[in-house]
Length: 94
Image (tube, rainbow, N blue to C red; front, side, top):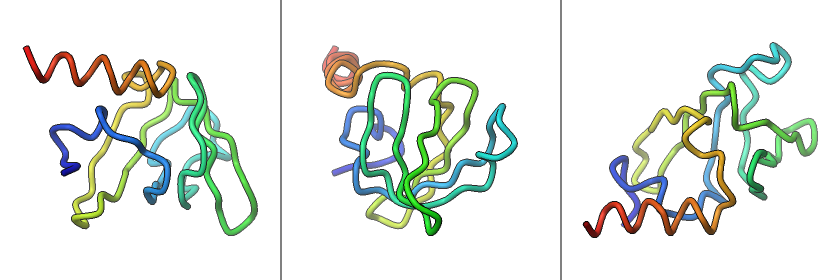
């Protein structure tokens, strides 16, 4: 089950997100649903279309299925999703 302790070892696509901080002022306050993830970007479906938000220099609030709100510094997510998931899973096992 996805929780605040293991959110980085799970798939983020489909979760609701708010950009709580960003170096680009136009990205701050954007909210929507994550529809894609690359090494450096999150694609978010907003009410104004799809926005691509750089992970680096951004802070996100993610709403988990349990309705728990988790804040994540985007710099810790700057990896390809499959590598991020495997990396955090290995840390959890050891």
